[in-house]
Image (cartoon, rainbow, N blue to C red):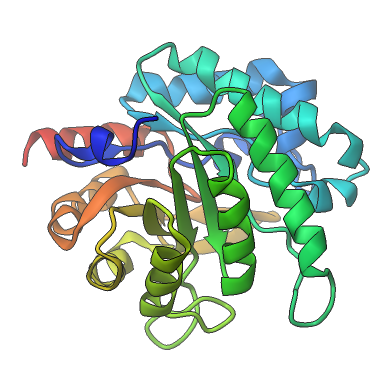
Length: 290
C-alpha cells in the first residue's frame, strides 16, 4: 500500500479547490446536503471533479464531506450512507482517470461529544461505516477534515486507519485573536501531537481563514508532528450576500503564498471554501515558477 511519502517525494502536491462553492454555482440550494447529489445529480458532481483534474489538481477529493450516517440521518438519508459514499468515490475516480489521486473526504458529524449530543460509540459506528465504504470503493487515501474536537478527530482517525489506507487529519483553526485555535480551543501543537500519537500519516489545516494565516499554522504543525502537512485555505474571509458566502480573494493572491507554505513544510496545497479551478491553475503556475 503506497504511503504519502511516495506521492510527495518530488515536491509539493497540488490538490483541488472547494466543492460546495462549485456545486452551488451549478444549482445546489442552500440547506441541501451536497452529498445527496452523488445519487440525484451525479453528472454535475462529475463535472466539478473533472474541472479540478483539468485545472491541474494532482489530488481530488470526493463529495462525501457530510456522508456519515449521523449527519445523513438529519436529511432522512441514513439508509443511503453506503450508496452515497461509494458513489462519491466512483465519481471522482471516473474524473481522475489515472491523472489524479482520489482522497476521500470525511467531515465532522456536527454533534458535540462534550454536551452529550452524541455518544462516542455512535461516532465510532458512523465513521467506521463511512471509512469502510470509501475504502472499498477504491479511494487512494482518506482525509478527515475540518475537525475542531480532538476526541472526535481521534475517533475518526481510528476508523480511517482501520482500513489500511493512508490517513490525513486536518483541523479548522478559526478561533482566538490569531485564529490559531479550533472552536474547541485546540492549538496546532495539540492537534499535531495527538494525531502523531494516533498514527496518522499527515496532519493539516483547512477552512477557517484566508491563506495568509496558514503559513505560521503550517510551520507549527510541521514542527510539532514531523509529518507531512496538508493545507487547504479559504479564499479570504466571506461576506454574506443574498444568503450566500462571497469570497474576495483572488487566485493570484492565493497562489502567492505557495512558496512560503512550501518553505514552512506543506506537502499538499489546495483550496477550501470560495476557491475554484482558477485557484488551482494559479497554484500550478506558482509551483512551476519556484
